[in-house]
Image 1 (cartoon, helix red, strand yellow):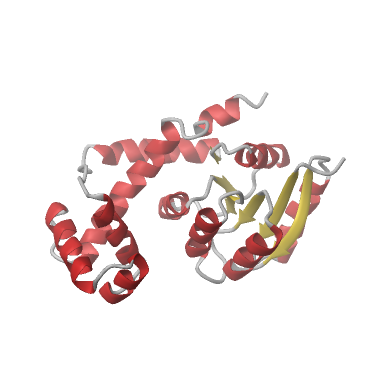
Image 2 (cartoon, helix red, strand yellow):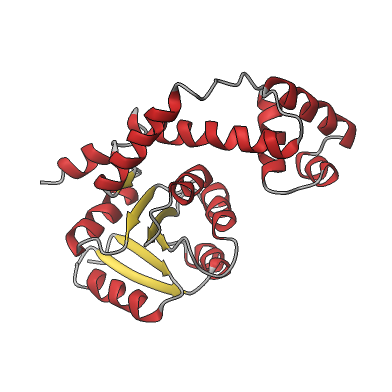
Length: 233
């Protein structure tokens, strides 16, 4: 019987990458189908091989978060699981906001990594439990300080593109609207966010998105990080 979960591994450290691959190959239901070393490799593997789960490092050559967003948006059947040494909250929030279904710290035990892969393959969300508790705790501290922004769908589309560093003209092209319309929506966004410029607007929204990302995990998009861990026995 063929393995049920096909896995791609993308990391710019060959020895670590091969070590992970060897661990996974010991499981009959897991198959490592391709390996790569940068963000572009991740895109290529996802498009060419369609693995069920793509293990990706946060810190490697290329725009990793753009690659995660591309895979999660264009190839939703390929579930992205970050495997990284980075305990940066910003990295975690950016990865989750881009569409990653899990965030696991390197140094995780083999059984826990396999649990994470199986959980993500089933469409659940998994974060290293200790790190998840840290994210949830810090998110609650910021919650009272972070206002809710009543943006329209189009306003949110515009500010998301702006947050990627695109100009008004590039945003207009991406969303198939006029540059004048982009300027109008950005004016509305900055007014609602009490921002004096685009940088302040993006900064305010990033903090809001961070809180929302953790809130989604805590409130049941898939299992919460702690529940996913505790139900594995």
